[in-house]
Structures are given as structure tokens and as C-alpha cells.
Length: 112
Image (cartoon, rainbow, N blue to C red; front, top):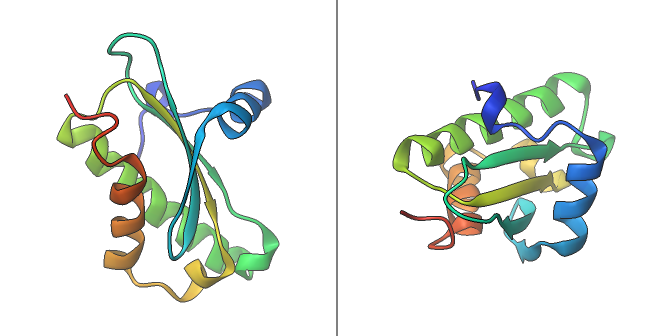
């Protein structure tokens, strides 16, 4: 689970990251990555639409994306805001595939 300090919660913050962030397309996600000034704590947001599947499927995908994001926090990623938008293929993706998409989205942008 992500701590509140690592979550994007306001609509303005989501809008800002999506509009001004660098867009990176993965196999199962579209990611928007925006650098933040200094070495601020990373923040993550998740968009999982009904196109992904039922509520159970959407929540599974969101939980997996959150867990992969938590791994990035533990690995020392700093200075980025990231919004992940799950594509419909994410519903059938396995854990390593989603984790790979999340890691590739941030890449070396936010490493210490």
C-alpha cells in the first residue's frame, strides 16, 4: 500500500501531470511522468477505466500498479510525479508484465 505522501489525490495534480508530463506507452499502461523540483518524494496516481473490465478486475489492476509503485519508492526513486492509465490489456496481464511497465515508465528519470 502506498503511503498518503506518495499519492496524487487532487484533480488539479492529475491534470497537471497528464498535460505536462512525458508520455510513455507500455504494453499494458500509458504513463505520464513529470519531474518535480529538487528531490521531492515521488507521487503516483492511477486511472483504471471501465474498459479494463469489471470492478473486481479494475481493482486488481489498480492494486498491482500500486504494489509496483511501492517497489519504486523502496528502490529510492525521487523527484517524479507519475500517473498510470491502464489499458484494457492490463486486465489479462500477469504481475511481472505490469511491474515491468511501471519500472520502464520511470526508468532512470527518478533514480537517486
